[in-house]
Amino acid sequence: MTEFGYLSPVRLLSGLDRRPRVDFAAHQEVHGPLPAGSLDDLVAAAKKVDLRGRGGAAFPFARKLTSVASAARSRDCSTVVLVNATEGEPASTKDHFLLARTPHLILDGAVLAARALGARQVVVAVTDRGQARRSIRAAVAEGGLADLVRVASVPERFVTGESGALVSCVNGGLPLPPGRKVRTSENGVGGLPTLLSNAETFAQFALLARLGPDRYAAVGTPDEPGTVLLTVWGTDGQPNVVETPTGVPLVQVLNLCDAGVGQGVLIGGYHGMWLAPEAAASARVSRADMEKAGSRLGAGVILPLNPQVCPLGEAALVAAYLGAESSGQCGPCRLGLPAMAQAFGLLASGDRPAEGLEALRRGVQTVPGRGACNHPDGSVGFIESTVTTFAQDVEAHLAHGTCGRPVAGLMPVVRQDAPDAEAEASSVRLEVDWTRCAAHGLCGHLAPGLVQLDENGYPIIADADVPHRLVSEAQEAVEKCPALALRLIETD
Image (cartoon, rainbow, N blue to C red; front, side):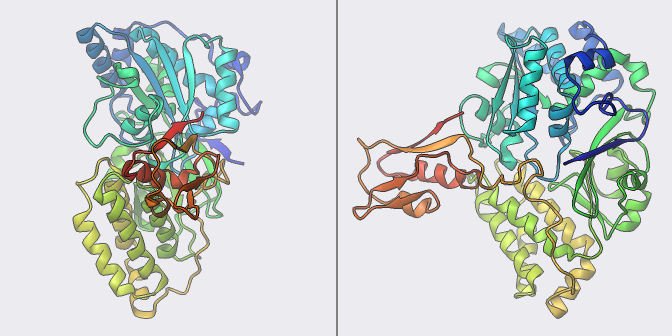
């Protein structure tokens, strides 16, 4: 169970000290009714406090609003608001916490934007099949929003939250980045201009509308006013969701969670970078300060590493996870990341560590900048930061094969609210068109985890949804079937 806490003042988490979930009645009591606001007023407020996206890229929210509105005017069409509540990274739990515990703030921000833009629909995209999805669906009913808001379930993948992949899912496709630059503000859900941002961003937008720019900016730093929601991991491997004003010392946040800087603190998640203990001890919680310290706040993941574990072994598990999360569309992702994960394994295990380190160095030079999305670059950044930050451990593994500390799996590769995420169904199913199938048998070799071949070479496929980890195998089998006899269909 994720714990939570805050450094005053509390805003996003208001009301949770008295109840486990802020339902509609409690939401109205705590926050009051949702105010009306014209597009111009809302854009001006977002600009004044420089409201940025909280999903990792920190894109200015006001610019998104104006881009969508401009595209709709030029095409004389409607718009869509898309809430990215997928939070595919296992190390992040803050958006799922909001969905499960304070869902009406997310809906308020999305509805406010939809009304200002004249949007025909709000789509909330979720991967969670449990408490978070039940909570947001209940919130839609509680608020009487069923005619405007649709909750869409999408596959649990690291890359699902990438904008192009997410739009593809919502449009009925697979979680695959388009491989080319497509602006969702111009061509998103249903081909319409789409305002896309993550769950916390819409919750912050709702607070801004209620408080006004001046009250909103009464806390935090002048350049980054307001509060920020963080996923802070204790050294015991358990997550906490913390709301804090920007600008507070990082150690103050860690102390709130009974954690120290350990042997280093990962900032921003698995596309983030490490801060060495000395840098972490003096860093403050803001985008600017984290960049100055040599990292980036990203999606707000703060993960101190327990001093008793092997940092290379822990990070190698993450590298393997990132390599397996490839969407299989480009060489850097399909080939480069798995090769780097394998090399990292050689270094961490002490099995040919010098060979592994050399392969990692080649990967750092050749993989970035060539992918269909940011997944290869972000993953390589994490690997490079690990090797640099824990250089003494690298030397120990080169010299002795080990640093002498165990690997405890404290860096999660399965999200806490989805303990069986590796086995969980993906909401897509592999089917055979028997009028086309010619028993080539290639599918059995491309997707052995999904397809068995009978004695005549015809595929035998379970009548069940494809596990998330096997979606890329299924997609490859579909694309390469010589008879075009395979297809993936949505089941949710």
